[in-house]
Image (cartoon, rainbow, N blue to C red; front, side, top):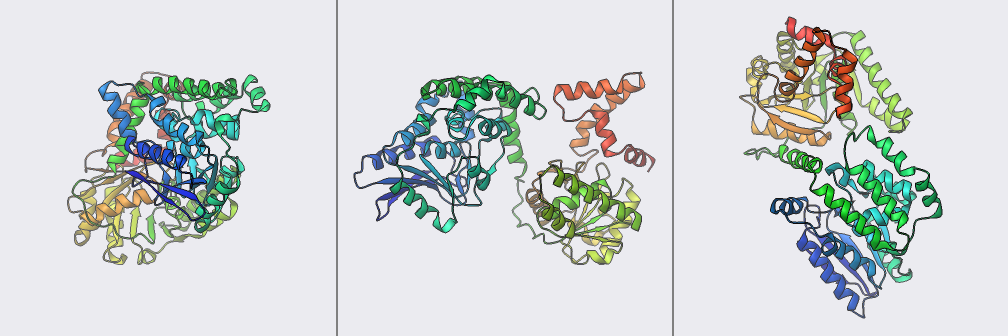
Length: 541
């Protein structure tokens, strides 16, 4: 939990952030960083300073648990004597300071890079200010430095979206100065430290064009665009006020920082941020299964039974990670329709420029449509995704039992049926059977309910939990009960709205109330997306 320093023969000191696993900026880590910066500043043999991170991270940012500690004590977080000391110490150093971004630089980690005089990154690095996802804003002077360095538009997009930005894009947006191979990162950073003058972001001012944009309503436009995704959240407006302060404060950098401190304090103690931080910790905790220490099996090839909306979406999840998929259905017409829908989804993504055409072609090429169960013979996992009919699912599992390799996992995407009853169809493989309940559309929704069966082995559980992480899902291990967890919560919600419809209510109004409240989709629209026929079939069976 400390920084380390070595001084090269050329007089450049390399200061390494060392706080595994992500080099988070805990109070102790920050104290060590400041102490070493002051030592290097006073050392006459040191000509420049390079800051980098140990391992795969530059720094993942602040230690969020320390926020919770202050809040529970009812104590105010004094950023001016905390994280701001780190940034001011780096910024005010009279020797060139270069951030050598070796991996992820997020939140406070990226703010350390912004406080440095120059930034060099490896091609695979990513930078970002994701605090908005916790209902917060960048509280380490990021709201003041980024607009000065990269401009108001880039700063707003970065802070309001809260997503990591690949280093090549960050360079085009002037957040990073150079992109170099990993084996040349430190040498390049050292060369810059020896040949470039001190260049402080605190001494920069926003451009005249940015001032005109802000007067013309650029901040409000940015907030309007993000409102659809962050409805009723209070952090975006606070970020907007900070960006305006960065423009208005001109050469008085600390004036803008004081606005940032005030806005950060209000957010930190808000109910909204408290709820989002709770969600953050809950998601991290959900992936840790108590008592399961088995190593997950490797996933090299996946089979999916059912080429409908759900099966196709599941297939897309795996091919996005370069894993080949065998997609099976009972009839060629069903298979052709399913592949057509997948192709259409990729065409839409290409049109939106979220993926390149060659990526879409590559992913489609990883999906093998099939009518023959024998094609599952070398699959590590087979996921059944047909409609809710217990006998049909049991018959499918019996077919899989004949062809799947002995250690293959057999999974059901059922949203409500008894997983143990499905597993009973293949008693010899019961330890390899588990529920993997994706939510529709599977290629978009983040939640994955892994349903534990009575006989499921620790290896099976470990594998499906690792699978969720592999395909970027929030995997939650749940018990085998009616509706599991997700649908158990949605049940009363959906039943109430259907009752109001039967009483003569306005369908559109019910959905509008839900979306106005902040739900991504109304309950009736959600039922339409999942498919009303699925509910009917489930009741019929």
